Image 1 (cartoon, rainbow, N blue to C red):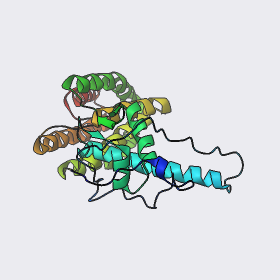
Image 2 (image 1 turned 60 degrees about the horizontal axis):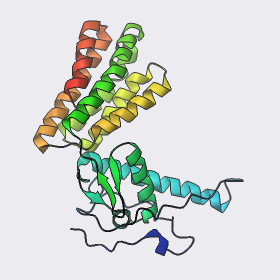
Image 3 (image 1 turned 45 degrees about the vertical axis):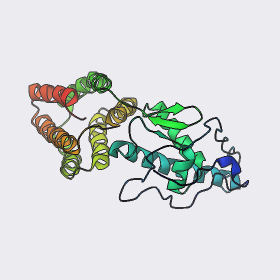
Length: 271
C-alpha cells in the first residue's frame, strides 16, 4: 500500500500551486507507478480556472497557462498508459493528492486529467474520495465494437473502391508496428499503434470529424484490459495479424475479403 502523505492543493503557497517540476516524473519502467489504494480526498476542491490570456504570449499569465496545460497533458497521457497497462486497476479508487505525489506534481493537474477521463468513461467520480476506475463488462465492450463496426466498416468498404493501392501500401509500417508491439506484449504501445493505424486508414476519407469520433470510441474500447497476461497477448497478436491481412486485401482491391475481415476484426478482436 502506498504510504505517501496526501496533501491538498489549497495548502500550497500562492503562485506555486499549479506549477510542477519539469519534466514531470510520470513514468517508471515505461509506465507510471501508482498506489494500490486510494487515500482520502475532497473532490469538491476543484481546480481554479487558469488565468485568462488577454494580451501577448510574453505575459506571465499566458506562460503559466501554457505550462499548466503541458503538465496536464503529460499527466493525462501517463494516466491513459496506466489504464491500458492495468496499473490503474478496475474498481479501485485513486485520489488526486496521492497520484500527484507519485507524479511529482500538485493534485490540480491530476484532477483535471481525471475529469477528462470521466468524460471518456474510463473513470468515475467518488465523492470525497477520488476517482474509481470503471469496470467494463463483456456487454460494454461488445456494444463499443458494434458501434465502431457500424461506423468504420462502411467507410472502409467505400475507400476500398476508390483509394489507390499505393496509398494503402503507405500504411504498412503502421500495421507492422502493431505486430511488433503485440509480439512484445507491450499493451500501452499496442494501444497507441492500433489507434494510429485505424486513424490513418479512416483519415484517407478526408473526414476529420469521422476520425475524431472513431478515435474516441476506439480509446473507450481499449481500457481497461482485463484477463490473464498470456490471454491478452494472444488476443493482441491475432488482432495485429488482422491488420496486415486487411491491408493486403485493401491493396489487392478484394472487396469480399475486406468486408469479411473488417467485420471479424471489430466483432471478434481487440481493436
